Image 1 (spheres, protein in one colour):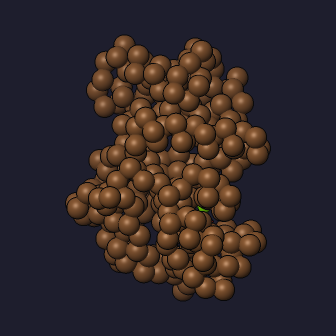
Image 2 (cartoon, rainbow, N blue to C red):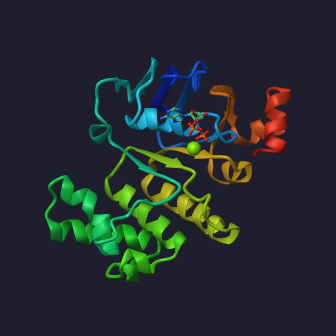
Length: 241
Ligand code: ADP
Ligand code: MG
């Protein structure tokens, strides 16, 4: 499988702190595959994702997308979309226009953008919800709107930062099914942060275990579970958080 995304030797410290948040992080994500970054709170997962998105800048290392170094390419021009733990939707726009927004910003005519948005709402099974106010939706529904909006931007890489962690177990399972469906349909390259090892096992092809800003193991998901590379990985897999 070809590599869509290559993270190579990424390091990052924040000013005023002597402890680096990321140290020499390298990861390769195959085109159309899903890699989960699994690690305890504070291990640097969000910082890594933000660096890939272009929202934060590493001190050292490179990020390549299909061979192109992304240094100097702004977040808007990276062809990526990010969904975070709490969806940031526009409260003054209805559901359909929240999803259509990304396309209208790109210059797509409103009518075409809305038609397109409707299809993505169908995909996340919110077909009948387009004209509702976002405030009238449940947390899980809002998260699905955020995913539809991210997809409507036609990203080549989808970055998911603990997107389902605020949801109850039942909703989370239905989100995992949703992710499975959209992978079948659209095959985006996915980098997903989670601190839930069951979630990583359910959705990811490969798992990168991050602790203290270092990758401890990066392997196919089943191998990380069956053959942890170290006692520390074993311990993390047994009792995250
Ligand atoms: P995770 O997502 O795994 O919980 P984060 O990447 O959010 O971890 O944070 C990793 C570490 O970096 C934490 O110790 C956090 O306090 C620190 N950190 C994150 N963002 C900043 C920032 N903007 N300034 C200073 N420290 C930060
Ligand atoms: Mg985080």
